Every structure is written in structure tokens, then in C-alpha cells.
Amino acid sequence: MEFQRRKIRKNLKRLNEIKNSFEKGEPFLPKKKLKITIKTPIIISLAIILLLVIGTVKALSHINLNVILKMAGEELLHDNLNHTNILVLGVGGENHDGGDLTDTIIVASIDNDNDLVTMLSIPRDLYVEDDIVGDSKINEIAFNATNHFGNSKDGIEHLKSKIEGIVGVPIHYWVKIDFAGFKDLVDALGGIDVDVPEGIYDPYYPKDGTYEYETFSISKGPNHLDGETALKYARSRKTTSDFDRAERQQQIIFAIKQKALSTKTILDTEKIKNLLNALKNNIETNIKVNEIITFGSIASEFGEGSILHRLIHDDPGQCGGLLYTPMRQYYYGMFVLIPAGGFDYIHLYADLNFNHQLISKENPTIHILNSTKTPGVAAETKQVLRRFCFDINRFGNGNNKDLKETTYYYKPLVDEEGKPTDEKPVSLDFLQKIIPGKATDIIPEEYKEYMQEADILLDIGQDYVNSDKYIEDPYYYLPMVTPTPTSEEAGETTEETTNELPPTES
Image (cartoon, rainbow, N blue to C red; front, side):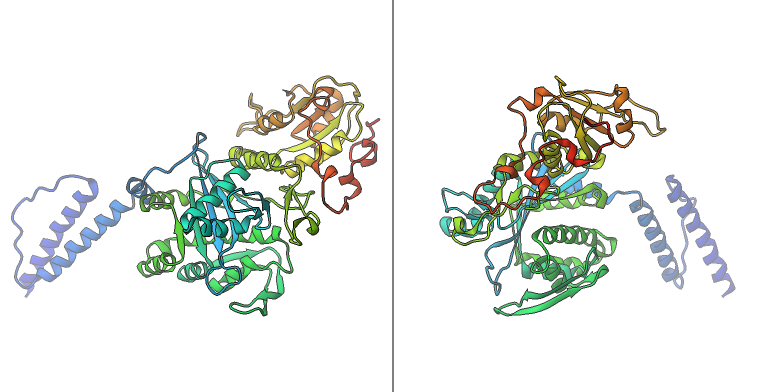
């Protein structure tokens, strides 16, 4: 018995030599044949298995799972800027009032070069013209087109083409999910975690399968939501605005993405099986399996700081406020939303958010000065640029009333050590695109005080005001709408009434 123990120790010592060679990456050359007694194979076998496990874990720890997924996947479609654009649609489905209408419409654009994503929500009440299936709210287009063409795929493709015309970018992929699939998806993930910015109390939430209401409420702060609660959080609208609702929907999409890509989900076979079962009967998409694998490989690269949430809505004082509500009598008594100034402004807004995504990360502070004799120019320009999400914190009259050339003064960017560089703010390219003017970092003495609180100072000259490039605030001339503008929205007769700049104004 003592002999057998010594023999085992000797063999285990040799196994340790094998292990050391394995870890060093050296070849293993046996010194002599290993003799194993009949009574010890189980112990030795366990030791060998242990070594194999150690080696496998060691090897896998140096492998990036995303690399494997990318190798298994297929290159995604993209535009000439290397952006991949996806249309996300949510519908009620069976047992829901208006179950075939698109309750949620989001265009997501992935900037593959800079690892950024923009999600742009389009309100379901946006009114669009359609020569094929008839003019209607945008949430009815896919339903009407499905009836017209005879199948859902062509119906969604028709809606996709309409949205491409609205946002001005090509859409490569689409996915449609119904409420049942949404609830099952969240439940299959084990729920999602959402930080609710404001509590909700909605006594008018539609009760499934009836014309009755039920109360939905949720408290402010961190909440763990199951599928049913997540759906109500996304749909509730009677006591909040569509603006809030769209933000909540984008918040939930991010929460689902985070949970789906967590280690506990990826390594849980049962959860993966439940996810597939939740989706297979409640989702339509034109994305191929290999492309889905590729999406999975890149999704983990996008954290909350790299995802931009944008909306199109009817609050003219806020970012994305490009729509208005016309009098219902002109639209058969319906509540609809119409672009203020036409779809050109929405194209420009989409271009800003989809094709100039780095501007949102830069987020410059801007001052606007009117250096012409034309009154109200700075106030009007401020309103327009705020709708394009720029931070305008001061505006007023410039010292010069006869400036010939519009000029952008900017602070040079600094490097990691705080030293000035030769680089210009990325925002200048887009600003000069809509308001032409020269750019310089040589700041006049009289403007240095303003630049203490600004990254960019826009000094408007006659060349812009007197050109066809001048952007008038479309809210001043809205047709078919009850006129209820504020004093600021109605336009100022002079800049002096703003009192937002120091007394250097004339």
C-alpha cells in the first residue's frame, strides 16, 4: 500500500512537468514510459482532465469572442460614409386595438468607423403624402401597403422607402416586432434594468383586448421591469407627451441590448433558447442569419456614451422641434403633425445626427451676434440652431452694424496636455454648410470677453442676411394652424429686447 502511494506521487510529479511544459508553450517529450497501476487510473484520469480544463480556460482567456463572431458573420451593408442604417418598427399585434399599425418607428444609424449609434424616433402621427396607398399618418402606411401589395414584406419595404425620403438616408435593414414578442423577449432575458427619470401615473392605459382602461404607475429611480411593465413603460402616453414616450422607447432598447450582451445571458443556454422562442413567431426582418451574428459581434462596442438619442417632435423651443399641429378641420378631424417649413429641415436634421455624429460629442457652446442693420437676425438664427441641438446660450447685437462677411470665431482645440492644436471644432463644417462664413481663431479684442463663455462665436454679416441661404424661422409663417407663438417665437423687432448680452449692444 505504501508502494502504491509513492508510485502515484511519482506519476503526479511527471504530470506537473507536463503542465509546466504546456503553460510555457514547450513541446512535451516523454522521458520514459509512464507505468500506471490498475488501481490508480481514475485518479490519473482526473488529473489529466484537470490539466485539459486549465489549458482550455487559459487558451480561451486570450481569445476575443467578438473576433470569432466577426469571422462567422457577414459584412454588413453600408452607405458611402460606412454607416449601416436600420429601421425598427413596433406593432400591437393580435388582441390590440390598431394592432397592425406601427406604434413605434425608430431609425438607427451605426457609424462603423467611430463606433457611434444615433437612434432617431419618428412620431406615428406624422402626416405623409403617398400616391400609391393614399395620404395618411405614417403609422398607417405599412398596413395600407400590405393590403395593397398582398404581403407584409412588401408593405414594410414601402414604408421603408417613405422613411428614406423623410430622413434623407438609405435604410439597409428593417426589423418589426409585435407587443407579444417584446414582452416575451424581456421576460426571456429575466427582465431589464431602467433608471426612470420621472415617475408616471397613467389611469388611462388601454387594457388589452377591451375598450377599458387600467392604471399604470412607476416610481422615479432604478426599476427592474418584466415584459409587461416594460411594455407599459414604453407605451404610456396619456399623462406624458409623445416626446417623453419616444425617449422611453429608446431607453428600453438600450436596456435590452445591455442585458442581452451580458455574460450571464450569453453563457446561459436556457436563456438563449428562450430568446429564440420569444422572437421566432413575433418578429419579421430582412436581416440574414450571418448578418445577425455580425451585429452581435459589434453591439458590445457601443456603450451608453456612444449612443445618441434624438427625436422629431412639435416643441419649437427644443432640439428636434421641427413639427407643428395644424387645425384638425383641414385633416378630416384627425390629430396630425406636419413639418414646419417642409421636409427640407428634417433632411438637414437627419443629416446632422446621422452623418455628423461627432458634433454631439463635441457639443460646443455658441454665441450669436447680429452685425447688420436687419433687426431680429440673431434671435431668429438662435431659434433655428437650437432646433438643430446646438447649445446657444447668448445672442444679441454686434459692435459692427455693417459687417460684410459672416465670420465664425473659435477656440482652438487642445491636446491631452491642454496645449492648443491646429485642429478646428468639427461643428464648424456643419455650421458653415447651413450658414456660410469664414472661420478664424484670431479673436478681436472686443469679442474676447464673449469667448470666455463660448467655444464658437457666430458674427452674422450682410452676405448671409441678403442671400438665398438665409434661414427664416418657419414657425413665423405656419399655414393652417392656430397662431399662439410666444413673444420670442413671434420674432423681436430689435435685438436689444433680449438682454442676454452685456451692455456692449447698441
